[in-house]
Image 1 (tube, rainbow, N blue to C red):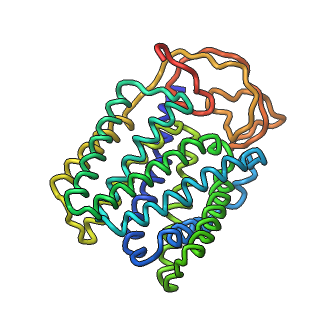
Image 2: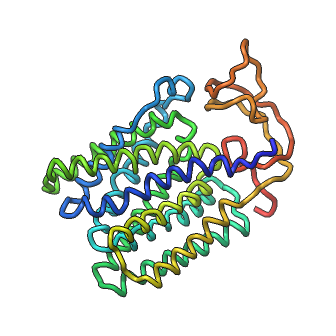
Image 3: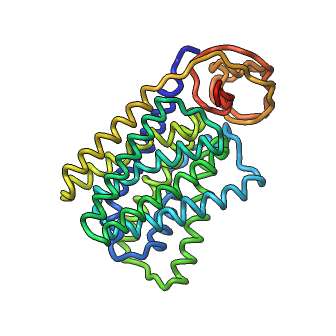
Length: 349
């Protein structure tokens, strides 16, 4: 019970960030001359290729019919609007600028998680948000100074981050469902809708090599990344997952730099430094105080060694499993994050 849950959830969020960050400069190169809706369709079609570990689904809570509306909404935001805006912006700005602009997703996610889910934001998180916002302003202003087209490209990438932040925050309840089912459903809906719009807009399919390349980027940067992101959200909530995910732009910018991008060195270094401060503030955060759990009955994947699940089984399970279960009211203190059991209010809110 003394283990800091933010540290364990950070592992999933960091892995998700690595998978997504590495894909951004590659999508820029591969997507040159490809329509934005076609790019979005190929990326999310590729997300369906992500490896599904055998037997995993039996231990997870499946999707329900009542999740359909939320799934369609997040697919429209995160699998159609966001990648379309990203693809359009990547064709008009540098890979370094675009990658670091994606850091603003963390800012938008923190603010939306506070408004929609009332996740706690203390002075430390607030300072991190300010640092990330300042970094985003520097990057957008750098794009505007380079050229009008680059400025619009940077703003399009910022629009993509806002759409993804809305997707992540509105989809927070889906984190308690089977992550593989969520990835597959969102990918299928996003790819189908994007393909329909692409055909209606007269966009042409690219070469077979480009199709394969963008699909591969989708498998790693969107399929695998989303699965890991959902698992992180389950542990540490939407705001902190989004904040730790801000590591992704650093990796993307580093790869773009290695591929020859050299735009705005001083501004890029300054923005990256501010982003690093924000990420450090989040990852090193600790949150512990006495809190009360109300009586609750729900269903989600859980273990019996986390101090919250003490109900009986005919044979005590060791592995994570899912079934409807009940919690009795209790008060205790331990390090925690805003997971499914810790969405309580805080003094002064």
